[in-house]
Image (tube, rainbow, N blue to C red; front, side):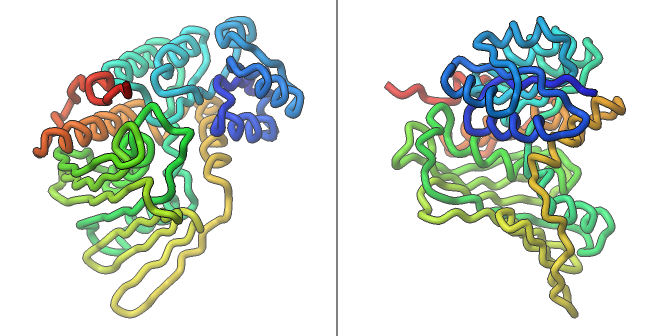
Length: 328
């Protein structure tokens, strides 16, 4: 039985609590948050112990697994505490508020011999799982370009970061996953209308294999769209993230892939627990999360400078504090 805890019981953290409480091989030992009313109601609902100090949860209970769903600026401190307590950690995206912090988290997990996984949930969308198999088998030939649209209305809950770090990171990660290549160059155009930070952006990514990815995202569209197009030399794949559907077009057929209807977060947390039990490396590693963060920060620098930004092979220490404007 895996002993688990959740730090952060906001909108996303509540879903972590719900799912972990339902997994047969998991005991949800406790949850932590500073919002006492929500915390206690949630603990009562799912039969677990509430803690207003996350350190008490971590160091009094000998946990095997901790999910971290606090604001991004707190990721490093909470994750490092969990790692030092001996627990494996699933931290929500983005991994941290700076590449330097992400590197510290990765090194600490490696030294402690525990798992560090990043919650890039679209990797676990059943449509992306199916598409990855199709791409790897060469069913649409060699992939040469991808384009994603992730738009919708403004979420007033998100105030600490702009749309690139909140939403754009999803498609940065999916594209690097499908290509199996790191991103080496980024050019972004972005701006703000309603939000303290950028609320619309277009990003052009160049991968180490020479191929490209385009990501359009905004908080200005009245209806939500989450789509991905993958162009191969022998066919084109279309993903609707919201419906978890995958269609393949080639010279002869239009085919809809058989996709399992299963909640992506359930897939993600099940994988995390299985990695702890088996000692396997998580499919979304700390290194993956660090690369996505570095690309996102480079995109912010790109749109502010109006120039292309190169991504060095081993990462540049781009600190979020220097990339994000603090509202007055």
